[in-house]
Image (cartoon, rainbow, N blue to C red; front, side, top):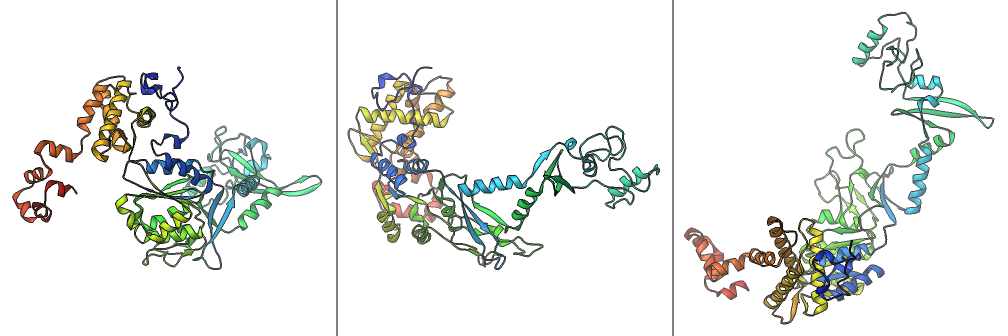
Length: 510
């Protein structure tokens, strides 16, 4: 298999025949195209645990930077649990365990589980009482089988009625009715016995465990008793978790956590205890990771709670619905030490709370992402790399030929001219450019072509036009298209239509 070309070093496109020849960088930050300053600051943020605010239009790589930053963080080292508080059940406690503590706990639980042995390795009397060994013929079988497969007799045997020919029938009838048959000795789930070891007598417990028997010696029983003495608990934020938490569009409850409703509350027999109903928020799940909030300005007053969590690195979880059974439950000091990566458009920047921006600026960076880059050989190679990445990520379209890549580069130049009014530039609004690549790939697949050709890209350009562009092409202006499409009855009722009657087409777009 030929070696891949690092297009960042061999920037001449003649070094490739298709995008399949281009090596995709292993470092996800190296896959971000054209945002050199933002990428550099993301590397610093990952190393120094700094916050980021990325400002710019959609499709310029803000979410990709946030995800790549998270992959540069060390693996989480803490697991967060919520523990039952017997003194005050509605105020559960928080327990934070390190990775080494979890390993010790796992090892201790392993010892408490005892040893799995074959039924034949257990004393015969124990195997009989547990239902593995037939008392009549000594044959071993699953305890689920009441009758021995070898001698077709009840494995458990009978006491006091050895000659009763109807004992088996009566026993089965009684068991089917849920009533224990008086003369039968049913198999047990657990057998306790003793043994001598090192001149000392110790207790040994044998338990059913499927088709095996679990043997617990004295030390295993002591460890089990220690575990049983522990308060009930539940894992809130596991050690093995994704360090990147996307909370874009989440509600306040999803971001800050909640206590699940139970119509029976914490009733001992009917309801569920409060600690079991605690649900972590995105800020808690992002502990030791990255919390990404796109459209940050749309969160309104929830930004104040996020600011508090950033400052304190802890945030309580409480029931947020006043009508819920969890309204009185509150868990204090829940860890939430995360890196915030916020994103917003330029026009929404003024709606990001000043204290939150101050916290980001004081403990991080604000970055205005680029929307175009200079048209040169290096950046053309970057567009080629981007094309290869989009094709690999999609996984359903073939590689693109060099001519197709050059056509995509030409389209990137055209868009920089049309959208950003920049000559000698290439667009960095890459989401839409990725849509063009996928559209061209779909055409190639439909035509059974092994590669995306230049003709496919040209055909895709016509298909990837926006609705506004199609309206202007068909009707001349957006307003003429609106006037043609809307009915007379709608015209009379539509305030939008009348509002636009007195403005020019350019003004309406603005």
